Each structure stands twice: as structure tokens, then as C-alpha cells.
Length: 508
Image (cartoon, rainbow, N blue to C red):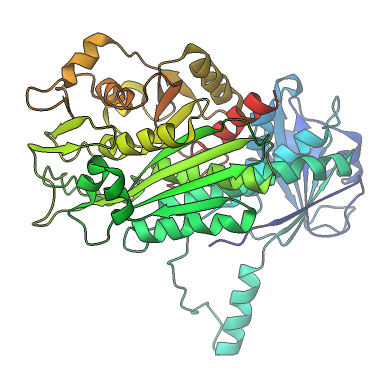
């Protein structure tokens, strides 16, 4: 993995070495603490030359500035100060990380002409630095062939120096408040990064068994984790989930994660994730082009796992259950066939007309299990479920389907606050009848049009009357557009969104 920078907070002081970052308001204005880092006014002279006006996330840099011993002075545009919300501070942190280059010692002066950012804002900027600094290079090997490096000892030294993480000190008005706020934010960021790691892993390294083992590691944070085997799931009657897994020699697992941070007698809230660790499409095989991306078809399970990590790490005062159904949809002589009929844990029978509509089959049993066992206040499932949602919404919003207006409204609000945005899509009897089957209780597809809606209607048949929401994250969990806080193929979408939902429910 790329080296993670260390972050500390301190009172304002003019740094003596390293790289110094300051914020400039729109119009190019610097705060007093920022000006103190540039006694010779090098930045003030550079701004007009670089046509720098403080536009949001724009930068200007001065190397070896006159009048100071620091190596670099970098100004980052903060835009209009009145428009700086939580997400803007994350993005500014991302802009800092982008401009770090190979700096080993960094000072960030958090000061603006009309604003001294508070602890929460400082923490958000720090969180943005960590999010943007993430990279997945676990499987890259480096041959030490640097120019002019002829001996192995020298090459090893250079490699060690290159891998050394940056030390970042954020100078702000209230370091104690910033440190306290950052402790909670860092826990959430760790959850996001865990989700990114899981999505980015190749399928040969992360199958159902390996994924379940990663979930089991959350026990170190105080999470209760059970892993159901195929034998146990068969005994529970999970024919829908197991039917998807039967073509793979790697088996199936269901990981059940419980965080008990709330009142003992309070019913939990439950999050359910689709965890198809690789999806060939089964006998209804996908085209070869782009199939390699199907290692990310467990983005929902990754988000749920990352969320439980975040809640446990920040000691959330909440009772939360995470259930992830883990399978590989492979092809061999044992694989499920189009036309097969399976019996779900609910007792409802399903005619499988397309083996590539497998995620809903996994979720059917996972949803029923979570609802039946834990009697939650509400259920939210996440799944990279349909390409149809990408046709409807592109890759900037996840699809939201719900049987409960209040829950849908809370998710929309959490999405706006975190900018992990969701957009509500319809459900209705007209769509539901499209999955009625003449041979079973239902079929797993319903025709050419409205594919994302039909998938949601299918899932709704497995939640009874419990308030429920389905998030189709096919366009946002993997291969989503890069941003100031994410350059990774696996985005970790859903962790910050659902953490905010939990905060609002228990703390808001």
C-alpha cells in the first residue's frame, strides 16, 4: 500500500523547514498566520504572475522562497469563505494531498482573512488528506534501477527513503478540539479505506472464505462476528444464495457482524451487503470485455464491512448489525442453469431465468435472515446490482428505493451532507407484477425495461413490512469518476453515507 501520512495538530507557529501550505480566500487574501510564514511576500508577488485568484482548489507554488528557510510555500485557493461546508473542507484536504509530491515534512496553516477554522473543519481537512493519499499498490513490485544507483545497499536506502510517509502538522486555532474531532473522523476514514482495499483486491486473493476472514478481524475492535458455512446456510434453507455459489469450488459464506454500542434492550438497525467476490454471469455469461471489473461486485459487502469498522473504531453509541452474503458466481458443470427453481429461506420459490441476475438471489436470503433474526428498526441493503441504474443516473448518484418515506428522506439528507449522493427511484405494483412467474412464486428478471426498479421490487418481497431501503451502487462503488478525495478504482462509497445515517438516527 502507499505510505499513509501521519497527521498532528499544533498552535500557530511559523515553520522553519519543509513544505508549508497556506489557504488563500477568493481574491487572493491571506490570513495573518499565513502571512507570517512568508515575511518577504513571495506569494503576494507570485499570485498575479500565476493568475492566481484564490479560486477553490487552485494552487500556486514558490520554491526556496526568499526570507525564510522553508523549501516550498504553496497557496491553495479556498474559494468563497462563506461557502466552505464539511465536504469543501474534505476537498481542500484532498488538494493539499495532491500537492504534497514527495514532501517529508509538511505544515498546513489553517487560517483565512475572515475565518479561523474550528476543530471540526480542521478534522475534515485532515480526513481529506488521508482519503486523497490512498493508493492500492499492494501487488506492484519495484526493481531498484534508479539512475546512478549502482549498488544494492544504495538502492535499498533510496527505496526506504521514498517509502517514508509524510509528517503533516496542521496549525490551527484550537489543536485540542481538532484532535478530538479527528479521532472520530479518522475512524470513519479507516472504514472507507478498508472498503476500498476490499474492492480493489483481485478475486483470486479475495474469495468468500478470505472475505469472511477479513470480517472476522473486526473482533479486535469489539465487534461480534459469526461466519456461517454452506452447511449452516443449507440447514437454514438459504437455497437462493447457495444456488448462486454452487458453480464455484470456493464455497459460500455469510458473515454476521454485531456492534453493540447502544442500550442493551434497543433493537438494532441492520445493513446488508451483496458480496459476489467475482461474477462471470454464470451460465448466462457476461461478455469478456470488462469482465475483469467484476472483482468489484462485492462493493456492497465492502461498504457494510467498512461501516462496521468505522462504528466500532469510533465507539458509536448504536446497536448495528451488518450481514454480508459472500459467494462467487462461477461456471462449471455444477453451476446453476437458466430455468432452475430454488427455494429461498423465506419459503418463497424463485425461477432463475438469468444466472447473471444473481445479486438479488444472494440478498434475498441475507435480507430475510437479518430481518427474521434481529427484528431491526430498519434495513438498508447495498449492492452493485444493475447496469440499468447507471443508464438512469450515471455515476454520480446511487439509486435509492424504499418502502418508507422517512427512511428515504434520511438517506437523501445523509447523501447531501456527505456528497455520497442518492436519488430516489419508484416502486409500484405495476413493476412488481413483472416478476410473477407461471412456474414459481417469482422469477428473477422481468423484461427489458426498468431493470433497476424490477430488481428492487424483487428485494422488497423479502423484507415484509420492516422499513427498508435498497441502494444500487453499481455506478458509484467501482470505477466511479475521480475526485479531490478519491483517485482509487474502488471508492469505498457508502461508508461515510451510512455512518452519517447512524449518527443522525442515534445522535441527531
